[in-house]
Length: 330
Ligand code: CP
Image: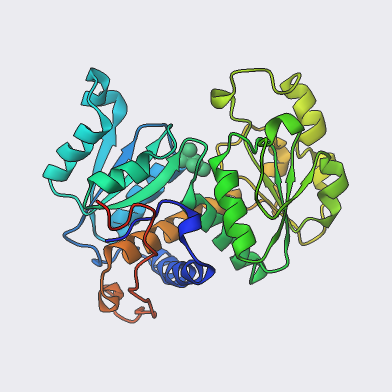
């Protein structure tokens, strides 16, 4: 059984296949009763050692819509509070019978480590600064749905790049799919060393007019231990998407944000509500993408996607997502 640990494990063809399956899942999600029995009998454990609203709820929703059972896990009310290790936690839930584990942890590499301990499929729901692959998939899917393709698009990723696993995964996904990526940030919020095929700018005003996608990142105060910019007010003045700046975007340009948003810091509240802000589309697409990932990893046959109303059996390949770093070395 394979895992989904990072975008770097996927080829652009794998991403295209996930999008094809997500298209079928989106069709299921538009039904009056958005539920199919595809993963009936399978159990998906969601282990969030770090807070989440969107990712946790959409994995829970995705698993349930495919008929799987969900084993929820809240660190705050678990034996982790008594000092139980990640390994013992995994062995405990695995003894109850699970087929996939969705894990978020503040330390980079924990999902990979779990994939070496567990026979279940492991899905990285965000590890430290390292990776958030399903966020990148849902963001790329959202852009593809709007523009038809990412090939040749100008995408600006704006803000706290250095602390952002979303930025790292999105840079990999967007460039793999042919987009030109510009990172826009003060030098203190960029990694010291960057091996990505990207442009860098320290001025949002300079790049704004050329962008097809303005992708804003949250300033991750919980990961910042020193003063990296003088004040939030100064950050907003230079890098915030204010109403004045949003007016400079081209007529077809879109605004994206992974959430949670700091309204009034990296994005003006009014800008987040504009018709070209796709923040809620990202959330909705997250359910379809996570359904696709669960479906592909758990390897259900195509036929079982034909739901109770029968006529919606769109073509869905059952080929697995590429093996992650830990694949095959449980
Ligand atoms: N985008 C994202 O990962 O949001 P959550 O922290 O709410 O899951």
